[in-house]
Length: 384
Ligand SMILES: Cc1cc2nc3c(=O)[nH]c(=O)nc-3n(C[C@H](O)[C@H](O)[C@H](O)COP(=O)(O)OP(=O)(O)OC[C@H]3O[C@@H](n4cnc5c(N)ncnc54)[C@H](O)[C@@H]3O)c2cc1C
Image 1 (cartoon, rainbow, N blue to C red):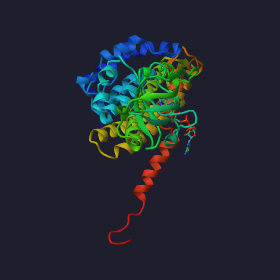
Image 2 (image 1 turned 45 degrees about the vertical axis):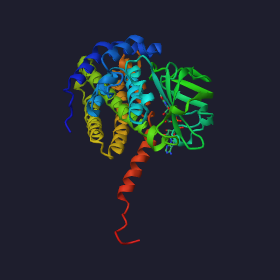
Image 3 (image 1 turned 60 degrees about the vertical axis):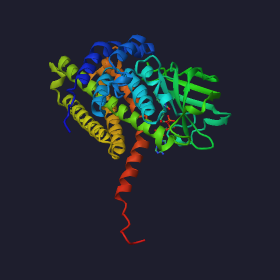
Image 4 (image 1 turned 180 degrees about the vertical axis):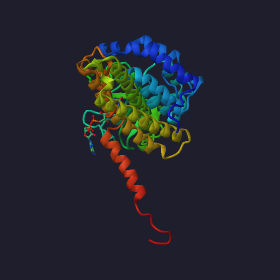
């Protein structure tokens, strides 16, 4: 796997867009706690809201590797802005492409153009990692269903027009496509977040919200491992690249600072312990990107190993992002602890990538389960 396959025009354009539009807006997005309409519109004009969707639907038609490199480029500049892609493209757009009916897929051009925003609503106040234990219920009601329950931590939940809601009922956990104005839906913004402050995270209350029978995405009872399972796998791939973006930005910022800042009569880059931090960050950048590239190639080849490779990439990159961001703060010294310097935001954002789309602990357990399955002795043919 090459380290940098980003020679495609789309990747180069995304990098320029990140430098010209996204990075200059990042501190304000964080401070004001909202995503400016102009950023969303500029992303849509570049086809960057849903880069994986086909061009005729308003996407960029990118293969998983290029989509990943584009996600890294935007994620370097601003985590909240990268999250637009994670939700609109990975969790919702690709899910509707794969599992949605023709009626569901009619929403895709609006989602890709940012005219309608979507959210993915799985987590609840009492149910996080143990996602199959959700309590939000669907009940059959005439030709359709009614949804009742509470959802928490729903990214873009505060402003989304459409929701993929995971609810359980007689046929088991299922995914529904629901409009904000369906009735019986209340959203409440969640304040005081450590990061992703521009992503309108909200709690959601559903009080016998009516949805038509055709709102079921995939089949009834098909949330796990199918519809919600594949959405989370796509989300994990996107977040893993977001982690790479954080490491790339942290490495770049710490190198520049180490060359500029002088102590003891020399640039701090001359001090070996600072070099150690830089060397570690650069190594973890390349290792994380290599894992993501490998996962991307397997995804492009539709290789079943892609799921576990994606999981490993997410665990590794998100952990490495926390280390690199913390080390970048260290290189900046006191300035690193101030919101006037971007490394302070990187450190806060890095924590989130270790928690969303499956925590490090849950995903590491999944990797171990896979390894143990592979290592288990296979019954020899003819033996019982
Ligand atoms: C900024 C942000 C945005 C989010 N956006 C969305 C969204 O758009 N949609 C959505 O549905 N959800 C969203 N989430 C929720 C996120 O997916 C959950 O927070 C995550 O899955 C963890 O669930 P939890 O917070 O309930 O933690 P818990 O499940 O309560 O876990 C708490 C701790 O216990 C550990 N733990 C739990 N079980 C085990 C186990 N079996 N073995 C070892 N350790 C374990 C976890 O790793 C964690 O460290 C978001 C969260 C954040 C912070």
